[in-house]
Amino acid sequence: MELFRIATKEYSKQLTASGSPNRWNKRGEFVLYTSGSRSLSTLELVVHRNAIKPRLAYKTMVIALSDDGLIHSIDKTDLPKHWTKMQAYAQLQEIGSQWYQNKNSLVLKIPSAIIQQEHNYIINTKHPEFESHIKLIRTENYFWDERLF
Image 1 (spheres, rainbow, N blue to C red):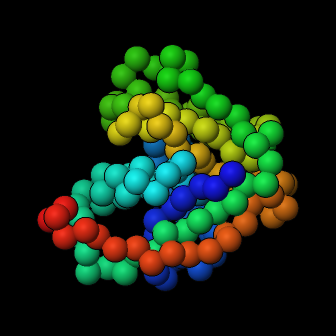
Image 2: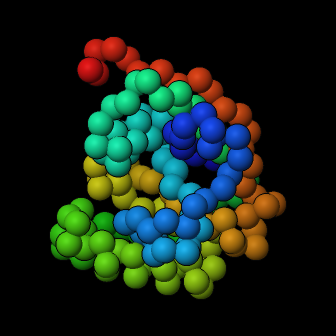
């Protein structure tokens, strides 16, 4: 299975996580946020950066997951009613943190808050299966279509 992550050129050479908190993880939990498509990765980048920044050099990271059996899925029907809103961050962080701490799966498949019919995939970089099942297989040049500006 291929997953996608868009990062600035300097952070696109290896699979490292900052431990910064986000929607599905607390501070100090080292996860990588990826998407099931390049287009969803693009939308996630725009939403989280609050703008398109064409002057920054971006790369698309193509990441291989060698075994689909290492994925735990969360269905949106199992999430809090307003899970797409900022008010739900604490609840979602708790769900993600429990998954991270339990290490029952290497990857957490979650619905995108932007396009709920598509999925993002959170990779636990501290999971014992990380090194053997997750590989950065290539980076691709990324460009912004000028019609987006």
